Length: 230
Image (cartoon, rainbow, N blue to C red; front, side, top):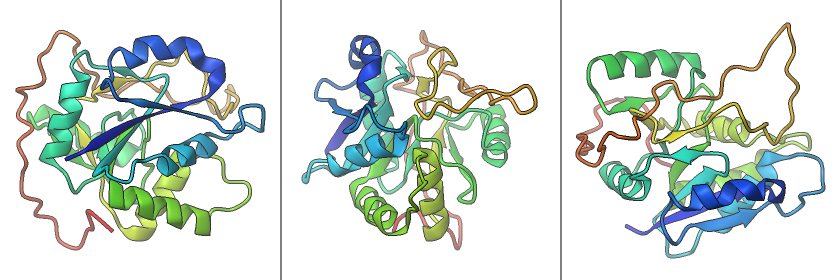
């Protein structure tokens, strides 16, 4: 397994990088928005991350620059990707999407470390691992199917998994935190009628908990009729 870690980074947030890189694998690559002065467009930088995946990588872990990883994150990332090498692994999950969130809550209550997500809901991309083949398929699909006004990275990722009937899987707890302190790069406005949901993890990690022995053993996928790969 060769896991490439890429940081999705608009240069205006350079102050976030030192703390983040200190908790990522030493070979993590910072991928900068290719048009930082253009119209805010998270997909533009996410696409650059997908285009930057090394040819010899088996997996691509793309992390947004405002993520706050668990102190053991480099080791944990290798463990969970090794446990589920054929799956898109969501390492951050908030209170949305709701169906997957409810399922995750129930799974956590039962002591599980994994929760399958609904392929018809939003795919969070704060910290998400892609098998390299699926990442390349996503890039090709997006270039063919995206519309001129598409700017949202997670929206395009969600359309892709829906089109391909891919079922991602999420870790319990989330292995990164994502607070509301840093504004979204897409710059959507809060309104009193429809406030934006919290961006914090639904089930956050405990920074003092050793998660490397948390039972991330690979389990046989028994679902029928749901793709886990392209």
